[in-house]
Length: 87
Image (cartoon, rainbow, N blue to C red; front, side):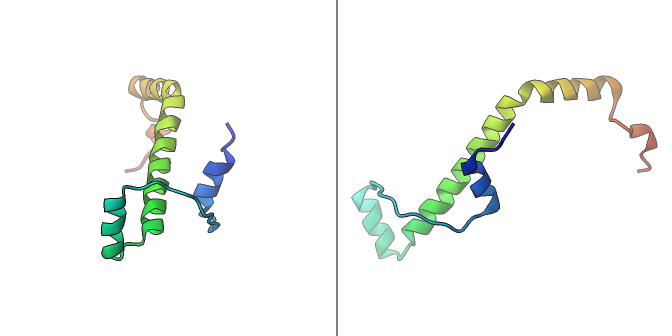
């Protein structure tokens, strides 16, 4: 599977930024400004975390069959190379 261009950019932490338009509740926006909260930074950080969690969820979903099969194999046969483990 090939990573999407968006996923690759997120992992590499490319510093590129683009201006965008957002619609925010005016009361929350004013309160954030009054508290000197960097709205762009907060939105970027939250969206980055949300995207990371969704990519992780989708990866687990896409690979669920393999993970289940691997866990069943480990349950039945033990860990690979377990007989040579010294700890």
